[in-house]
Length: 430
Ligand code: GDP
Image (cartoon, rainbow, N blue to C red):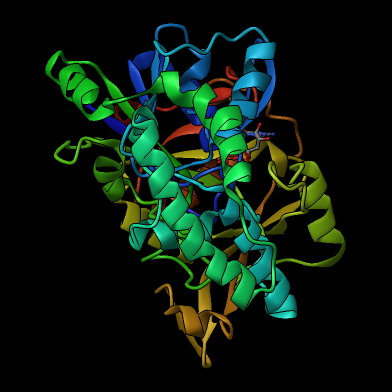
């Protein structure tokens, strides 16, 4: 067993959190390498139900070191709040089990403002941003107009750097959006109330990881969102502003040369999508409502109802390819229980022709789903723990998905709890 990445294959919300929570048992270090507080990983364990946004999902495992790598959007204010919420439920968070890369860029207070102001300006053309400042943050990061977490150890230089950035950013706030400018007092408050609190967790995590690797420690890389939200490979411009692919994990974690041997792609047994953008397999009406209710498909961060549809085999196969997934965890199979017939989106129709290829983003708007159905299973499967105990129809469904996406399904999740899982090791596959 080498190093492993757990990644989303679709639009996000596939259930990555529960898979990381399950698999952290076998790993020593869990690393978040991209994204910020704009999505949520839900973890249910003996301490309760947690919606994690920035904290790695390994925080619940004693002895596991959790790292926020240089690729994340580090929002000190929200990170501190999240740390408080977890601590209140009896989970200790210390500089021994949480480490923040000194090379992580800080999400500055104006990034959230700019996100909100831009969505207001776009009005009905908005992208459905979660308004956590992620797009303005990454734009500024690539312009080198942010602060690195390690600068918190150089208070004088930090203040002068922050003043320069403020002067520059106030031009946009005032002249483009007609908004209130930032003041030094406001930033000082942010520094003392939020940044000071997270400073004890900041360190050279690259050096820590190189040492851990040399000692043979097992590393787990935890992604946020999914393939179709990747900045370069997703449904541009309805993507996020970071790279959600496993290939980015080495760069964003602090170990640029690491070889990731196992890439566990998480796929939901049906499709969901939050926010705007093309969603070819979308279902509407009563059927959609029933599926949304059955799967409690409401955003972990925003509470927004998720758009739902049958499993999209075209998008999923593409997602598997760009992630270079070596195995698949199929989640929420239990949610489909009781459906008489289960629809699957097997191909797209684009310009009157059927295709298996995931189209260029512009062509997605006119793509139509080609559906097939399979017989459902009329019983609850949430207590099933072995492949052979699944109803034949459920097995057939899993095998159909596996064959279509070209990647072995080694985990089947049948409930949100840690133990609600069927492990199907590759050697035991039928
Ligand atoms: P993530 O961002 O990929 O971690 O996904 P979310 O946390 O947004 O969504 C997954 C949701 O589904 C959470 O509420 C989980 O507790 C729940 N969940 C995960 N796996 C299963 C499953 O197999 N069955 C059911 N019923 N719920 C699940």
